[in-house]
Length: 330
Image (cartoon, rainbow, N blue to C red):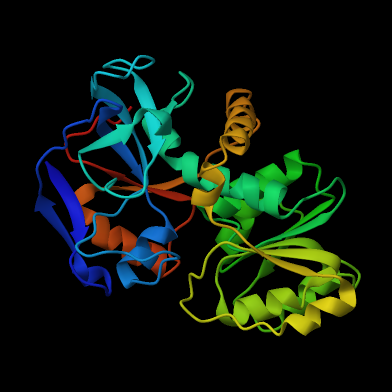
């Protein structure tokens, strides 16, 4: 089968398409023929050797997949060949097939196509738990969503509205992306490439600041976001897309009872109670039309390097999808 691998850390030039043996499912696994692959900033961090956990080389990237079950292991009872499914996996998703443990499989509702299903697990669950579990968003509070036209950001804007946020402040890098965030439900639009964007956030809150801030850039963006927090505000860190280190003098949090909280989805996945509840809520939102999955561009698997380059350069809007050359498009 075709798969994408990294044999060294670096830029998009280290991405290569290779031929690899098709996996054989263990007794508790299923073999998934992959139709759609969700792309994430984590894939870029893995490529750069800058992910939250070590990335061994060679590495086969990809954690969000959707497709059909090709075969099942002897101990699998609730799934069968032909089932339409999505899954969150640790690696190996940039490929034509993947062997996935039965417990990691998410059945796809009839109302979702493969692209939507691949866009949903990682970013939907991330947005949900950054806001609700780690950010502890309460009715009427103000939320700051950076990169609001991206995959996680676009879902977060919608979920914040569903969770009862009083005001949603969205940042993005272009007027087109800001307009897109507005269509998703953002109340205040700010271009973070312009000097003094943090002052605009404060002005939008009458100087008080925001109650919950979602931060995934790191470096200077982290520091300025911290300046935007209200008393008792929570800043949730869930990435470091800029590659720049974030510096924090913990004492500065004390005067206003503020918090900086980390988020890493694999830890949530270990809590089946949290996972089950959030999946049920998210699927309910999707099936009732209360949540849109903003799909951006789709690329053949062979163009993974170009797709990652565009994502890293912030030239995309919505979720990026890879498709193996032999995949179905529905």
